[in-house]
Image (spheres, rainbow, N blue to C red):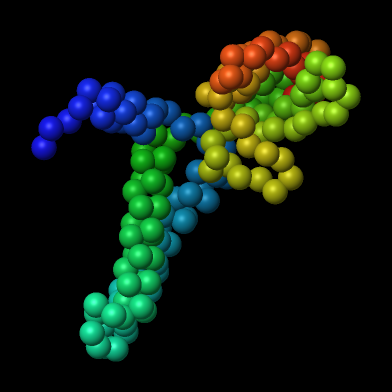
Length: 172
């Protein structure tokens, strides 16, 4: 199999991304460990039972239950691999609240706009109901790191435009 230069570059970028540090709160780390354990135990047993029950229904080539169970198995195994990679590279962060770091909630206001926006700076695994998550490696996320209330930050969006935001509040 021949690999093109573009494919090789994409693979190296993906490997670099997968090996990079993932900053998590202790709560998120504990939740992800519990999810992984549940998937590796109960989840695998449940999928195996569903596959076996579907096999008993007969011809596998036209068995929708069997194919659905195998599809679920593939998705679950992908999630297990994702969790294992995340946990392998996880670093617990403790946010102080006075400076924007991973683990803090920051309220910003775009220049020329009166509306404020709140973001949790961290991994997408830190999902929260009350606030959107922003990666610290995103253009705005990296520009905000180390800033304090009252600071103004200018950053470049992927289209090349430059935007300014004011840090209104930082909290742990």
